[in-house]
Image: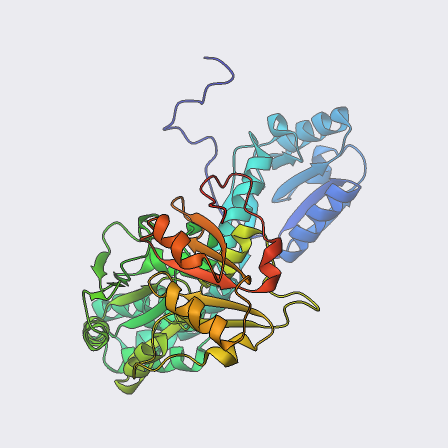
Length: 453
């Protein structure tokens, strides 16, 4: 087999095991940064350290639980291993896998939780890389959650004598409402949820997470959003959430499309509220997935109010709103000292009573306007802003499907934006950015669909 080919799978290179070293003698051979790092780690594990500088004899190692050597002297390491073998003690040489009886893995610590990653000494750098990736998706709060669970064990056994009830309780403590509230920082609400489960173990309760999906690129999701998507029983999502983000959900998770697009509503807001309530009351963990941020033109406040009024637990996970995703794509700050001192977010739709926005007030902000859902109202918006006092030459940038592979960028002015959008046959979600500072905006080098106007 070529050295470049992977080895056949199915055989363990090392047997993973966690060893208690509390009060146990461990011999550490060598000096320098690597030896000191191992000394710190062993001391944290409660080991009783014996430090040696030179080659040990078997008698020096008698009774030790482990021997670890850190040195650049290969002869010292080989002779130390021979002494360890003679004394019947497991031996490890730092960064010398061929001399090791055991490996010290890369570790992730979350309180009483320890996650170990080993490669059998074959690829330590890869192990460290995997550790960094796992650390990124496991919040530090999991350690506190494990400690809380540990403190509850005696009480749970006393109050829930039936094993099936205990099993349901501990599942909820790991992935259900108490866990979700705890990890969201709602410690008091989590304790109340756990108490309700102890009082009525057969009655499960659900939770609804309002999660911002961001502007479309899955890489722009927050870590919490990605984690909740992977844990949810049901995803209640807008029509415009990309498939690439929905695909991050569990394969067996139910998906319910309640999206609104161009006035064609598949579900009214009242119906969406009822769907969320019914799912939560059935004990489901629900992610209400919204494009952008739930609280920026997403009616998240209405949904939270409905859930709260009916006593259903909820949390909110913010998302990158479209204006910020679009700004990153055009490589332009939306505020700038001396030129754009404010950023105003406004919807392109008429107000609920049919009234026009206060165009004069918007024109007078002295900053950049981000107009959401602005494609179909671009002509009215431009006319209103000009009537309100903005010059007809004010730069406008429209971004359709921002941050996605379908993204298109249009540069125009208040005088020309409506005609340019009509000519470009835009039919996706489009954000309009308006302001003098945008005259400096530039498209990414890979953007090929930019229309100059």
